Length: 233
Image (cartoon, rainbow, N blue to C red; front, side, top):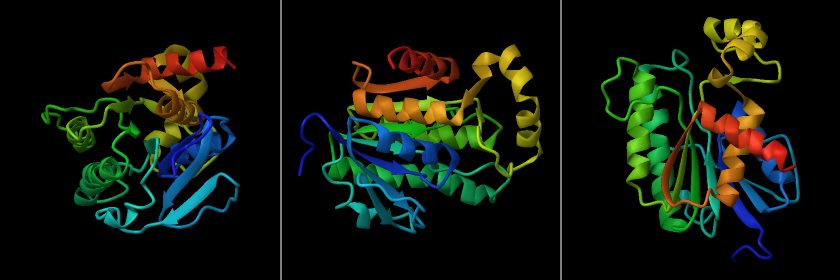
């Protein structure tokens, strides 16, 4: 069943995370969204007429999601892990293998779907970076760019400000949160609010940019998108 009256079907991964959580909330409030499907390991503690939750625990194999991913107009992929929170092997699995496997099934089930992918500042498609996170994000970007999506949007945020209080994953994040007000004033293009990032990822998956193919948005591009969204509200 296809979307009607201009409304669209959106699927979101990483809904229990910081950015993905905001993406779900924004999608449910968006007038252009007919339905929002959250692919989760555990059910979200929310209910909404537009929300469809699909529990899936093994993202190394997304074959069972083929039906849930059919007739989707767009996907927002926010699944990820912090460096140091998991082993290097697990970091690569989550950062590279999971999005590639999800993209495989999504493209087969909904070949016309737009794909918004949460990458990161410094992602290195050449594979030469000494930082595993940068190499892995670059590897994932390369694979997604070759996956055949007519509209692929790669987001490379710098520091993502959590907005809501949380237990920070490491000292660097605790420090950045503490100095955020000054950091934002001194280096505005090195920060983005988690809710603003989520809005940009959802909005571009729904509306596009007028261009086809793969597009990469650095932090300053994302900020410009957010400012445009606020202007048109």
